[in-house]
Length: 241
Image 1 (cartoon, rainbow, N blue to C red):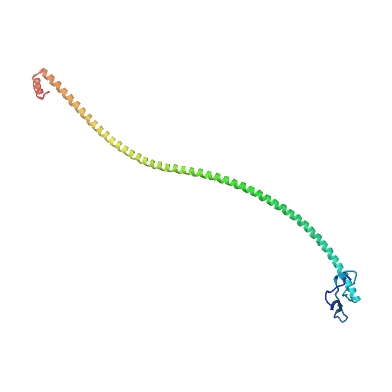
Image 2 (image 1 turned 180 degrees about the vertical axis):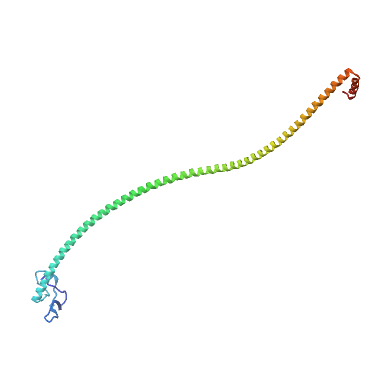
């Protein structure tokens, strides 16, 4: 009785189309009446207080019973399939649990790597800061060197300007010295000319002096020996010689 299909409704006409066809080839329709009964009464073994029962023909009952057996077989297959699916679900849950564990481990590894990366990043930042500080110190030293070089360059330009002025002064003095040399040369030439004239005059004087001495000697000789000497003495007295 548990496998008898039940309609939970009032008494009504129920038509069912069979897969088998009638002799004339038309669809075979089975007509029957079903009276709903209470479910809890059907599931029990005592049919007392049953208000409604199902009235079926024997053929319909066997057909429904056989169908219910097929349904039971299908249900068993479905249960087995469901059990298999449950087992698959359990396996999947276990796999998921393993994957969750792996994921947690991966997350921990990632966290550890992130922590390590953060430490490394901090160390790199410190190294970069040290390098930047070192570069900054080197830049400051280079700036000082550049300032010193600029000062030296400016001093060099000043010295170069002074050197040019000195070169001009040296040229001026050189030109002046050249002029002085030329003037001195001219003076030397004049002195040489004057010396030549002096030498000539000296020679003339010496010649004249020789003539005078010779004249004096002649006069002295003449004075010693004759009247002409007296005449020359008179002449000399007049001349004051």
